Length: 102
Image (cartoon, rainbow, N blue to C red; front, side, top):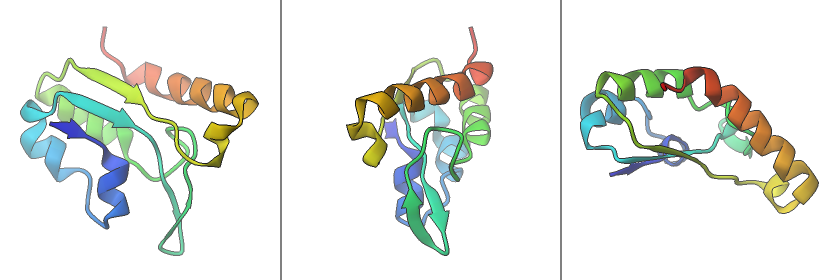
């Protein structure tokens, strides 16, 4: 199963039960963030700058011995700007690196 926590949150669902209960069935993870303000999607910033609880998600996945890919999936208006896209991808990478297992 491919897992994308931002999509779950976009549908008003809690993103944590799936990796907690079914992390052994997750083979691929999309990394993108959503930032909500007053109940609405306000921005799709670099990973770690929004509301997706990536540390908790990865903790649950690691409990299930997850060793698959984490694919940064750029979204939002910044992804169409090459100058800003590269910076936001670097920010996402920098945020995620301390949580990656060797």
